[in-house]
Amino acid sequence: MTLPGAASMALAPVLSGPTRSVTVTAALPRALYLATGDPHVPALCVIAADAVRVPCAIRLGPGVPVPTAVVGSTAYVGDGRLAVGDRAVAVTRWWRPSRPRVQLSDLHARQRALRTDADVSALSGTSVRELLGRGEGLTPYGDDILSGALVTLIAGGHHAGQVIASMVAHELATRPGATTAVSAALLTHAMRGECIPELAAVLTDPLERLDSAVEALLRVGHSSGGGLLQGVRTGLEVLTGPAPTVRMVK
Image 1 (cartoon, rainbow, N blue to C red):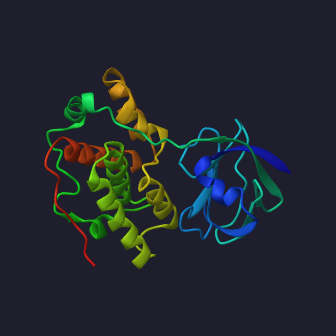
Image 2 (cartoon, one colour):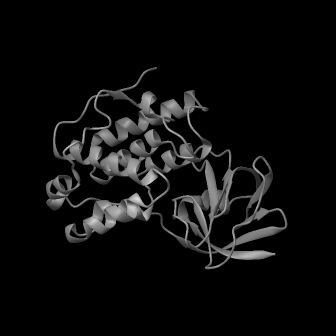
């Protein structure tokens, strides 16, 4: 049985290339994650229409269930389709993952609106190594903070974004088990400034809609939205003032 799907353009190198085997790394009711072995596109996932649209997703139509598979099992991707067991997903259209750009004119107002009295920079005096993999679940809280900060700094064109991205890349390359395969893949996208639409909205929606955008982001996952928001706050602090000290322990 073949299902139509809409794929992120970030997946084009894997989906449009020759057929290769991929491995199921996480099987959830509304998302199936698969590791590709490609360092530039380390994972892809098939998601239900109402699931969070991560940058590495193939999105199914409304009411279409995600294929079921056992973690560790093999699937096949290439030539515009993904085959999982007796089901296949054929790419019928493409979408561009969110890669926000902040408006410098409202940068300080956005930072003030998002800051809380208890807010302390999540990266101040903290090493990337200490944050990476810290927390529970498929995307540990520390990784979510890093992702939010990376996307924000890159959106603002700040050199710290590339500095932290190189730190994260170093840690992922030298400590492959430091975090989950799913989180490592999403961090790879964050290092390019790619993110979920809910995060992009917090950075780009008009200020009068900022509260609604924050509420939508906080509804993402059990704690992922909160970690991403903390990362956004940290990134905005850097964009509007002195950068915090970030260490990398080798």
